[in-house]
Image (cartoon, rainbow, N blue to C red):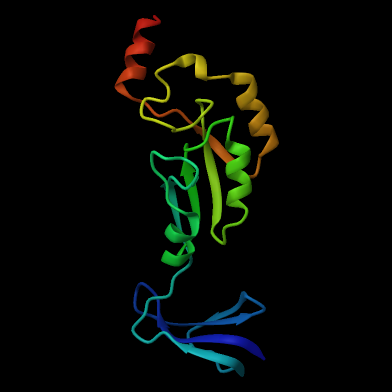
Length: 165
């Protein structure tokens, strides 16, 4: 017996779609499910799709410049996975990781190449805030959380980079 069946849904192309859930996991997807279930939800006139992925968010809540709580922009909106776009740097990526583990939404991060992350605009205006050794150490420490590096380009960074050559 299934725990839950979501009945009478539709795909994006309008085909009938029903979903069977057991122990919190999808175990059956079909145009019609005729198995017994403890509970049934009608999804009539509703599109059922796989969870969405948002590949550019800012969800490290300890940053003041911009952030959202992962579950507010994630699971509550049908987004199962988010990728934070460089909010945290090597100094605070560990703290961000701990907070991200508390979310129901899958959270991954691009680590900002600047040690502090985005604490203010033009975070890369001072290139001494980049520490290659520490960045590499954090990549090794959180290999399943950090999925890339973020270097946010700005006119200050372009001026600095040009003046270095």
